[in-house]
Image 1 (cartoon, rainbow, N blue to C red):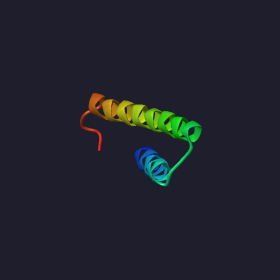
Image 2: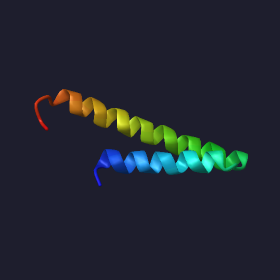
Image 3: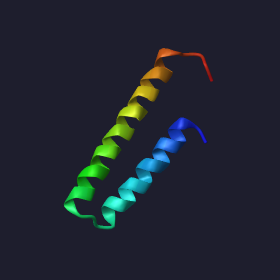
Amino acid sequence: MSAVANLLARKQALMERLESGTGPNEREEIERLIEQIETALNLLESGDAATPGEE
């Protein structure tokens, strides 16, 4: 599984946990983890844009 696919799968699992109803502390932790995943995805995306022609 690629890094992007792995991150997207983790994000989806965390989103499902948020929707299932969590306590305030767990919700904050899940939101923090989602933000980290989004940052990693953005970095990977910008890294792909920095190396055109590689497919």
